[in-house]
Length: 296
Image (cartoon, rainbow, N blue to C red; front, side, top):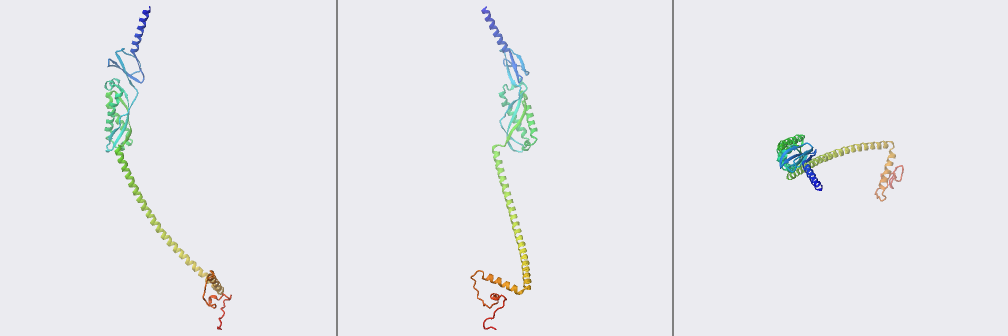
């Protein structure tokens, strides 16, 4: 009885191993190829539980989801002879697992097949466009054309290109240095030109200001002379009117002013005759000059 149970247990284990080896599951994100001793037998693209011959058939799984590809940077010469280092990326999916297995086998082999095709399409399409086209709204149509060109070439590998985009496009290092030097020279030239224009304008403004200064000073001097002449005339007229009203008082007032101005400092020395007309009011408020001795 013990021997029978052992044999039965062994058979159950063998059957379990056989059943386990006969069943496999394809996930929703997967697709599979069943190989019979290395030769493709069938393709399974729907998820679910499937059967295979144990130990004779094996299953190779591939992704259904979109995969990313980052090709190396490619140098492109545009239609206007400008050089660009183009950094692109692509997204693809495996649409025919059998064809993909026959041509590529592993996903790790995709970059070696797709990168040259993508870069070749970039050179061919961008080579017919100018830098202005790439920077304009035409860029979207250029990317569509590149994607179509790449798709036509990768169908034989059982793949489909979902998207091709240019991540970045830069001038090469040597070209960038030349452009920077040219831009620097251009900015220096513009700065010198602006500086020369500014100096010219400053000289013009300065000359105009000097001219206006001369004109304003001349006008002011003319007006001052006119006002001074009018003032002198009015002063003379006032003096004349005052002198005409009381000549004696006017003479007395003028003599007092002359005494104050000539003797204000205190150290004035005057050599004049006491009987001179200058001192007529000095000793006599009436202004009558006393006769000197010996004179009648």
